[in-house]
Image (cartoon, rainbow, N blue to C red; front, side, top):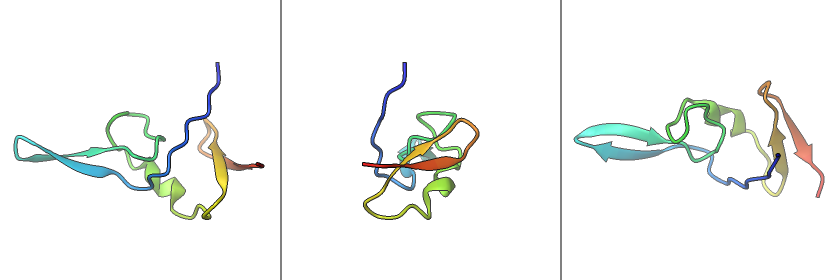
Length: 65
């Protein structure tokens, strides 16, 4: 089953746990949810107001609204 999940974050947030930093994914693309794996770098050049679909191979397509 496919579903569309809207994520607007384009960088992880830092959470301190026992004095150590943990980075939590906010873009939704990490293969290690809830932790960041650097996948947010793919969203850096997204254009404001557009919606994108990210494919399993890492590529993206714009979703026409």
